[in-house]
Length: 106
Image (cartoon, rainbow, N blue to C red; front, side):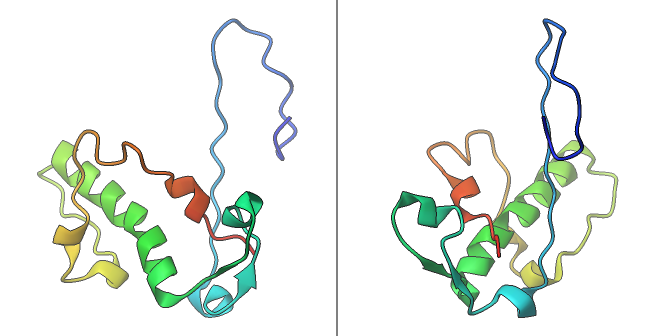
């Protein structure tokens, strides 16, 4: 049962839930919390570097869409303006990554 109170999946087909959240940078920057990383035994502080690394996923998604729809003008994600080449989508670019442990929760 997800937060939206969907009934349990009764079909033989798999079903997934996608959770989307948004935190204003000024609200989370500098905060220390257990977050997801804390579940592995410690606290994490949301530094500029931490937030930038987690934000990379947004630029990867923009890169993936640009490759799929090259005729579209890509969205410009301000934190990566001029640095788009730092986060280029490719098959396997997330292999071995545990990016979900970098989710920002307060």
